Image 1 (cartoon, helix red, strand yellow):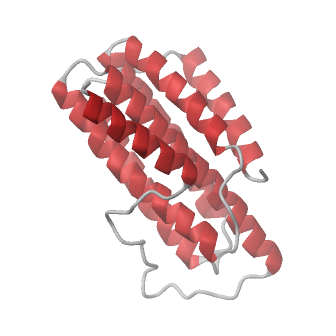
Image 2 (cartoon, rainbow, N blue to C red):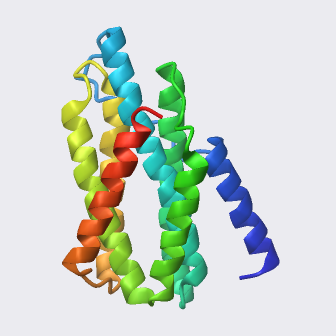
Length: 209
């Protein structure tokens, strides 16, 4: 990787942690038949907690894909991680905007989440492209499940958050399928379980902090 590329990735990392990432796609909009309803203070707080968790997930996604791109052997795989990272950057900007709209803030621990995720991404990349792709596929599979849960938990009247989460879910499924099609392998059960346990710690903490 060239010096210019390192500077670009460093800048992207700073923007991810600071919550000022740009969006290349506009905020997803609710379907016409979905009507927003005024949220109670409790519903607003719950939506904000869930969207803060989603924002942390996108901070981690940026770090993971940056690290995996850095360690990828082939130009085609580097391009795949770059494309996925840019779509995740949209997610990061969308969730940041929604947190602002809800009168809330991102996690105070974003630097910690970012540092941990980039370390994991570097480790996955060191194990080879097939394992790195398998890690990408499993990550996206677990994120899809996590977003399914949020669609069940979000207040019915919070159609703005629901539209964002629904589009994120569509993108994550595409990333998973792309990683598997490119040769990603199934990770061992203990690794998948460890990933799930780490995600639970992160989500439970980020909901409040």
